[in-house]
Image 1 (tube, one colour):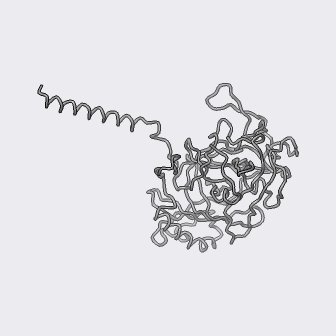
Image 2: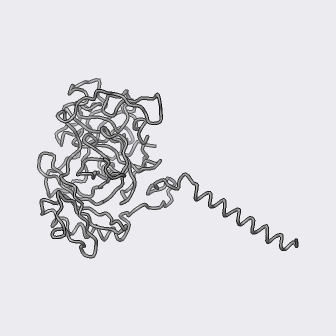
Length: 381
């Protein structure tokens, strides 16, 4: 074979080999089916899964939503609005209703933007009280994938330091919700959960004791040995249908000796210290007192909704709506209020704080404004 033909033949072989290697990398990578966080740890731009607020179409849909929200909410069968997307991936205005209203009330489009009706029923907070919960007969469960390792149930008392994502409450209330996340500033260690879990719906004052487990998970006894923190600050909820509440949150002082920064062993572990903006279509997860680890997807952002805690409707704006990852499943249930919602990947980047539900939808406060309000950062990895 002539030298020229040999070089040509070797070049063809090398090209084919390289193609096989590249095919193996792209086709067999463990990362191929993994959700991608909106922000890469390296700081480089990462692929966006869904629609972010930076998308011009989303911005346009939010503008249309905001212009029409007040008109929609004049109808008492409508509980809220949001910006999501159609099955084809186009930005859309979402209208949340108690019952089907149909095209006579909900238009197909507004200013050229698709409008979707989502029937959800009443919006309800997700704390619990003694009337609806009793101390479980079982107090432990097996860790999935292990034949011998057991851990306390999220509703049971845990050894100190307690994990996040489990039962908690104010010592003066026979009820409660979920420890959200450990946070910190330069000097101190704190934790976050909902106002209606730790803050007694605006009634709590600094220094009130916070317990684990919640009162009704401990027979409604006020056990000082269960104390894991004390109220530091409560963000008031304004109970008006014209209010612009953006969070249902309370900050509690704690310590690394009383509270860890990780979920139980069957959870997602330690959340990232890097909070991210909610993105429509983003895969998320949470660990809570009642339902443990569940998976979901952000279905809408910029949500405005009304929620009645028993003192009249409190309107919230700029919220997140989450649907279960699978149909006919639950992302949350009563007692999961306060759960931290994180991205469904190895980063576990914080996204929001769970506080309410309507039908199969879960509603959450974006975590960013909460951290800014209390001037803290996530005490994570």
